[in-house]
Image 1 (tube, helix red, strand yellow):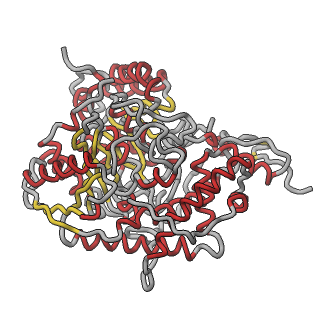
Image 2 (tube, rainbow over the protein chains, first blue to last red; image 1 turned 90 degrees about the horizontal axis):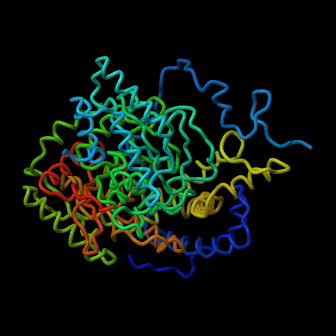
Image 3 (cartoon, rainbow over the protein chains, first blue to last red; image 1 turned 120 degrees about the vertical axis):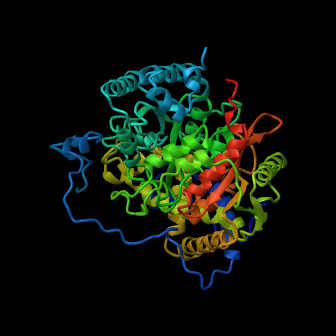
Length: 101
Length: 488
């Protein structure tokens, strides 16, 4: 399990990628994550050594197939139960800050 | 005087309840007393409600008195805090789900409830099951009952520690890259990850959907098999579940006394630099024991093993980044106050998620992003095919594979938290089983000089749970390691 960090590993813009995932980072967090993610990218970059030409991709490992069920209506969560965990509910609906100016 | 009630295993408890030598209320109360006494030092539980648990237990006792003879009626079980149990909190070890109360039962819970089990407590987990030490939980780290300065493993460290400390006879857990087997090995208990598609995940908080699988942690293989038997099988609410019938494995597990006629593979790639010498010695002794029980030990090769961790740490974060998009502060859980919607999303997620979850969501977002998808995600999916192929070829030469579960015994709390890559390397022997979608069992196989448990890994082909479990049961028939208890 010796680690060999490639010197030409990719480096990501941590703040930008965090923004894509709807997260805002403090300066301290961004600095720490940058170092750690640099290490991780160098480590996972090891896969680039492997020749995978002609190999099919696996998305699910076992017996994946299209699963159909009978088109029969089923009761879901009751309205009140679905709203019970809402941080804010109004008029029987989930309420959020204003979207349109 | 007979042994204390908390020492009863899962099926021992079922027998005692059937013979009416103990009531579910007495047993549940004994476990809760012990939890109140010991768990402040272990932090293996995130929640229990004494009155609610006792009410469930008394109800089980009442229906038994009225003639109900379901074999698991009134047997207590602990549940990893990422499975939904209606009316109980379900936090997944995250601040973002603080205050969330499950409005429905996960399928595995509904099945255990139908069997009559009592949900006695909820067990700690790394946040969203992302970790190998239970240190990333927003509710603080769990401690290893064999040495409280050390981690119990993870992510199901709470389940493993609670079962080892006799706070519950068995627990449900989940395994995405080793999260059942590694903590079971670190805590000296038995852990079983069934084949992908064998156990429904409906109601199990999703981490990486092509890898997640629910399974039991218990005192021995027979108890683990009994829990597995109840939770396995097709579920219309999880389209990945297999329509294959679930055969009753318990008779074969109970009858397993030797390994005659079985070929067990030993991969040379699992005995390499980085494997702790004491763990290697204990694993080899366990392999010798299997040989003495009649198994033929054959050498096999898993040449792509070394790429497993890199492959896993692309695919699992990618899937996690998509699954965790749902924590937006709109429908449940924590919401940060904000002026507009965009800021609400960002503040909710930034304040709700801990460092490891952020790290993986960012990594997953990156490997899926335009321009990098093919270089990372697609390539990792192809490597996954090679890893599957390794196992297919190995299983052409043997019935099951043996090896160590972990490269080291339990490490110290705080030892690896600053270095994620070091933490990830601890998954080296377990992740490939998830990537290949096959089943894996961890059984206790001895102790290091410092008194820390080690686990023997029994890896079976897809849908051959019966093989993995009967091999583990025969090993436990011949050994006493699984009977050892931590002195807490």
